[in-house]
Length: 172
Image (cartoon, rainbow, N blue to C red; front, side, top):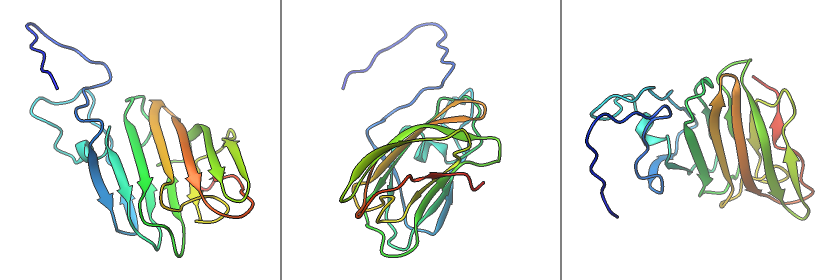
């Protein structure tokens, strides 16, 4: 990988992300709250733990399910990627927004004995993977991006079994 040296001021309205192919965290606890990114980023690195998630792949490794709460959507352009590496044996993996005004926009493909791509509805604020009809088996993935205040872009590929149903709901 090459390095570039700049002279003069550098500005990025969406921040700088290094190592976007690296793994930031493996979540093994029942809940995780993703910290909001600092905008603009501070020199010397982010000190609130955001660098462990933003732009990195976060591994979901808990057979009894994990509930992840995203920060409030602010337009930061932060990208969070989640990959299930331990199939669910009980409960569900849940990814939800921080408040009642934020929603997801986008779609996720869910495959089981049937397969369908499900789009969000105007009130979709929660993604549920139940290991069967809503995905959540090892290899399932979700990517979300903070697009603007109130809106998270979502895409994903969810692996499950049986006749699939939408992973999107309004629960926050």
